[in-house]
Amino acid sequence: MSKSKMIEKLVKAFNADNHFYEIIDTNLTLEREWNGDFIVIRFCKGINHDQCMRYMNDLRSKMIKRFFINESDASIAFNIKAFPFFLKKKNIQLSKEGMKYVTPVNEGIVFNLKCYLMFSFAKDIEGKLGKIFGVEYIDNLITSEEFDQKYYLYSTDFGNKKVRDKFIELFQSDIASYGKIASELFEVEDNCVRIRDIFGNNTMLIHNIMQRNLWFSGRYLETPISKNKLVEAVKIRIVDLIDARLNLTVHSILRAPYLDSKEDTILIPIVKDCGGFFRLLYQKETSAINEIFDFTILNNVDKCIPEDYLINLLGEKSYRTGVYGIDFYDKKISCCVMSKLIEESVVNIDGELEIDSILSSHKKKQYLQSNPPSSIDEGASVCTSLLRSTNFSFNKSPCNKSSCALLNKNSEFLQESHERPSSVILENHLTEFTDQQVILKKMLSH
Image (cartoon, rainbow, N blue to C red; front, side):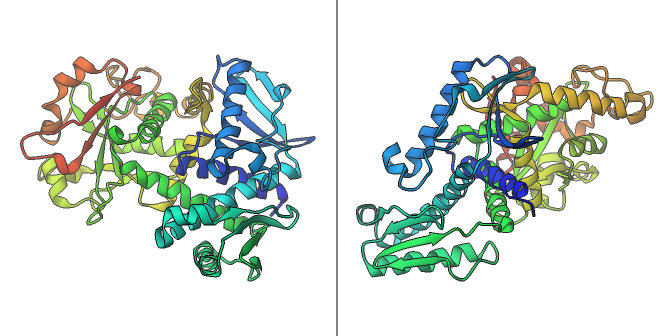
C-alpha cells in the first residue's frame, strides 16, 4: 500500500479516536494534489478567519491536555513544530464552499498522528493499571520520558518492575487482538518502557483500531439523548444527512435491543405520513437511504428484535410487513454510518460537526438527475407534509392505522411542538412501550 494510503488511514483513525473518546470533533481529510498530499479541515459557510483559528487553537490545546499538562511537557513526545501543534494563519483558505485549513503533509505530521494514536492506546492500558494498583498510586508513580522520535512512539518510567511488567503484559495482549504485530515491540531499560513504531507500514493495524473506535461509537448510540449531548448531536446528523440528500424527513427514532442483548443498538426511523400518522419506512425509502451511504445500512430487522417488543409496538400482524432499522451492533454498518457522518460534515461556529448542506445539496441534485420521480414511482403523488420537495417521491399508500395506532396517540402533541422536522428527534426506548401507550421521552429541536 502506498504512503498516501497509510496517511489516509492515520487521518481517519485520528478522527475516529477523537470521536470515541469525546475529545473534540474533527473532520480531517487527506487530499491529493499535483504537488503533494494535504490535510484539510473544512468549516461551514459563514465562519470567518478568526473563528477558524479559534477552533484550530482549541484542537491543539485539547490534544496537549489529553496527555500532558502543557506544551513544554508535550514536547517530550510530540513534534510541536508540526501540525496540529504548529499552526499558521496563512493556511486558512477561502473557497466557494467556505473556509478551510490546509497544510501540506510532512514527516512531522505523520509522526504526530502515529504518536497520538499510540498515546491513546497506551493511556487505556495505564487506566487498567489504575484499576489494578489504584489510580492515585499509578498517577504518582509513572512519568513520561523523552525518546528518540526516529525509532519510538512512546516512553514511560513505571517506577517499579511489577507495574512495568504488568503494563507490558496488558499492552501485548490488547494490541495482539488487532492483528499481527512485530515481536520486538519494546525496549526495556530499568523500569522504563519504550515502544517502537508499531504502525510503520502496518495499515491493517491502523485500520482495525479505527474500526474498533467507530464500531463502539455506533453501539454507544444506544445511550438516551438526554444523557449525552454528543450522542444527541450524532443522531441529529444522521437525520439531517438523510433530509439534506433526499428531503425525506425522519420524524423520530426508536431504540430497540438486538434479541437477548442488553444493548439497544437498533435504531428504527419513523416518518410522518400524509394523514398525520406515524409509520415505518417503506422499502423504496430504505433503498434510497442506503444509496446515500453506499452500503446497506437499513435492513428488515423484525427477526432481530424480540417478538414481544414488536407485538407491543405494532400489533400482532402489522409488524410482519417489515421493520427497517439500523443495527449498530453490526460492525460494518456501524463503521459505515459513523465514517459517512464525519466525511460529509463541516466544523460549525461552535466547534462541532454538522452536515455539509452545500455538499449534500450537490449530491442530491446528482441523485435526482439519475433517479427522476417518474422512475422511482410512476404516477405517485407527493405528500408535502412528509416530503418538502416535489422533486422526489416514494410509493404512497394509505397509512395502516392498526400498525401505527400506538404512535398516533401522540400525533397531536407532536404537531404542536414540531416546527422543523429535519432537526427533531423523538427518541423512545422500546422497553417503555405498553399495549396502551407510547412514552415519548424527549423532543429535540435546534
